[in-house]
Image (cartoon, rainbow over all chains, first blue to last red; front, side, top):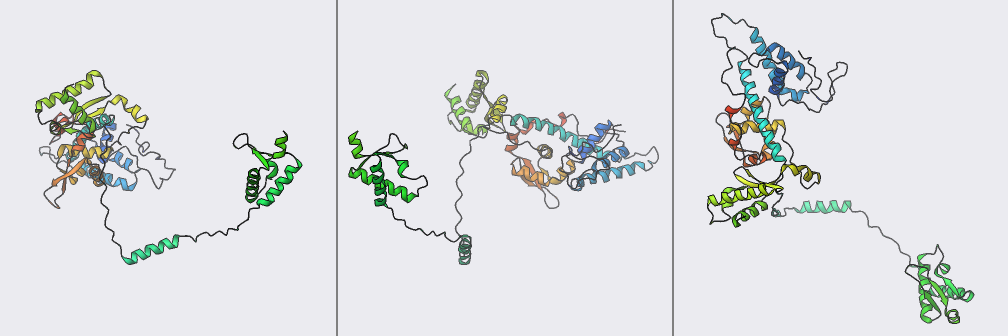
Length: 255
Length: 180
């Protein structure tokens, strides 16, 4: 006889007496109901379905459902009670041999056979379903017409409450003080003139400091354009984003 | 292929569900039932003989073009389509009973399966595999369930009779256990 323990019955749970049962078990039992469990036991014990050793099977049954979480065990407990009742009935004296004896197991046998037959159909369905699953149909999905929008039903107080909610969630607008900084074009022109007086050629990076502020850069650019317009200097850039070369007009003429 | 076979093929290609034979017949009012059947045979043979990646399958009294099983894995790997989820053992058991004994009430299913089936019935109903087909006699006039066309589609059955007859099953139902 096979040693019956709960091992392998519920995943991740051992029937070891030293470890207390966990408070929560993800139910992964391989049985779909008490009849399934009963049939499994009968198969494992290799006993005749028409002559079930009720005492032994009932004992195995109880041993197995002991490991189940109570919620799932409810259906099984009903069967356990039934088994124990049949077991008790089997112990009653059968009376004289001449009288017909109603086997208390008869109803159980009928149900087991019925269940077993259903399982055969399940096998057929499972195979058919698996075959269909392995083939795809066209996945065209007709466009469903959009459901009409429900008319707006709103009371004034609801509307006001909604406005209130929105106002509560809106943050105060962030206001920035912008200080106008005047662009100093004449100053820039003076600077460039001074530089070009000292040397005939200057680079953009020479007249604009690395840490120059935007207004200084803008001043220099405007000043430079103004001087180029007046013909005081020439501005050249060999390619986009390259350094700009500034030459005094006199120097270029000399060259 | 004949023009009629081409017409049927186009209609079958455009449809995501099996098309019942009478709807196929409505595509061409001039054609007789026999002509439609011959044209369907033509399409099916065309796919089978010439070796196509799809085949014509009869399901639930209708016809549908399905991909061949050998390409399923590649199609799924490429995430072009995915197989529907498998039904649980509880769902299959419940379906098996309803398929054989419809119309069938919840109490009878629970009696045979030995477990409560409320949630299983609900999900089967939501998936359209079963439907309420009537009400039983007796207390509370219980709802009776039956299978739907989607049931046949799900298992690619032509009709319910394609399931094995109860007397063909290995374990026949016996009114009385054999004498001890």
